[in-house]
Structure formats: C-alpha cells, structure tokens
Length: 213
Image 1 (spheres, helix red, strand yellow):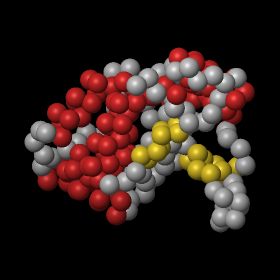
Image 2 (spheres, helix red, strand yellow):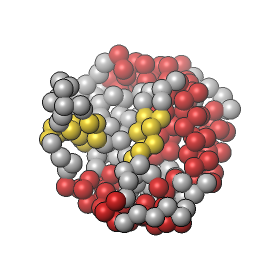
Image 3 (cartoon, one colour):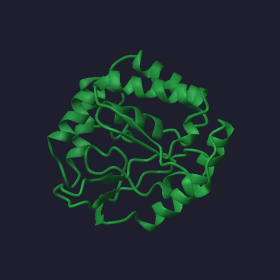
C-alpha cells in the first residue's frame, strides 16, 4: 500500500511539472526511495516484499504502469474503508490520501509510529494510499518495512521498536563494520558515514538489512 515513490513539482519549478520516480530501495541511505508500490504491497495490506537494489531514475509526465495498476487496486480497498466510516463516494471519486511524516530525528520517528498506531485503532489507516517521510520519519518507515506484514501486526512491531530503543546501544565496532560494508559499494559519500556512525546509534540498529539514513 503505502510507499514513497512519486515527487510532483509545480509547473514553474526546475523540473517543469514533471514527475520524478525513483525506483530502488526504500530509505537506501539517500540512493533512492523505492520501486513501484504495486511490487511491494498487496491490495488490502501493507505487506513489504524484499527491497530491490536498483536506483534507476525515470523522469516522465505520468506514473509508471505498475504504479497505475497498484493505485487502481488500492482505490478499491480505500473505498471500502471510507464506506465503513460512512464516507460515501464513487469509485471514480476516491480521494488520493497521503500520510506525510516530518523530520526531527528520534522524535519524528516515534511521532510517526504513534500516529500510525492511532490511525489503525481509529480505522483510518486503510484509507491511506501513500506514506511518505523525511529524515527521522524514514527511520520509522525503514524499521516497519523489515516486517513483511507490519500493517496487520502494528502493535507487535511497535513493541519491538520500543524495546529496541530502550535496549543497549550499538558499539562503535559494529558501527564501523557497517561503514566498511557501505564503503565497498559503488557510490560512497558522507551520507554513508552519517548513517553508519550516527543514525545507527540513534535507532540502535546495526543490522545490514536496515538501510537507514
């Protein structure tokens, strides 16, 4: 379901109203924001598949075909959720609802997590088409995406994240080992240093599968 894939620019912007699609790994240390949500999420749940390594950039005036397919399927689920809330509209008038997370380090991470939990309790989470975030909010998103069915197990995932944040920190040795793995990739920058040496300690996560910037 939710995925950060599309950035729209105003007509007078540098991109002249084009849509920038970054197809690669979610929160991959600044290298890309993810492939089509159709490849990552099913119709009714936000189930995360294994991230891909591609960082291909496509600049077009429209969404890619896989995202169009996803949006069409997802709108049906959104419509069902809206009807449960006594909000009635036709299939062609289903609104594109996005949840946007702000930056702000660990505070933003926990703020987004708490918002998602409360939205689920209120029956509103399934009304959302896209989830997007910057900085600290993406730390939360990266933690969620490690769980294949995070949207249906949100309370359990939340408890795991809180337990991890209350646990011991990551040693400098582990952080440096992670930095060495980043250094072996084709593109290496100060973003990798920031992710491995500092963000790793903020979120207390040193797993190689967790690409957090």
